[in-house]
Image 1 (cartoon, one colour):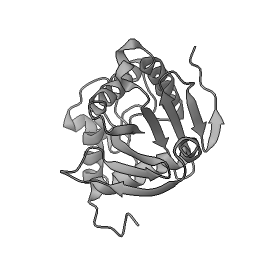
Image 2 (cartoon, rainbow, N blue to C red):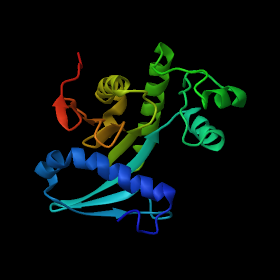
Image 3 (cartoon, helix red, strand yellow):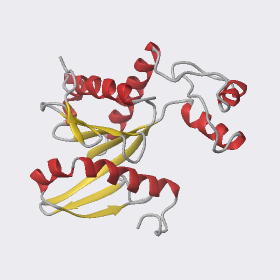
Length: 216
């Protein structure tokens, strides 16, 4: 339905990626708000929020955002330009890169296939910063973060645990009863998703099955 609509690329991603994340937590949301009846996409100038979720017991605004700190977006654009469909390495997000370096990564010549210690810190800083910005809109009751920074599931799990700690500090009292969903999809069937609420246990699932993450 999203593909057949007149949505642009950004709107399509907002709808499809958000719905993918919401599907994982549909039971949790249903216990609180009833059955999900409708999803309404909002475009400029009617957003934020990006999406209205219409439940039996009310309506919730959802704000979609991608965790994609520099230079990931730039590196992907270069790879699509000079090596479309080919393999590529993922650059570290903890340093700056020149274009020739990113071009070499588009052919698997260099780069990292896992997070380094500085990458973890950079990803968490970017994640927390993005959420702080989204909290400024009071109508966004759900903040859906699509994790495009993590190389694998392990990095997403670490981010979820650290985010839960951050959300439960005095710095995030304004979060209130709002919900943050961190969603990382590797393939159509392989994904990780975490649901973070203040003053509630961290919830996470891997490929649709609950998993326990350390929060101590």
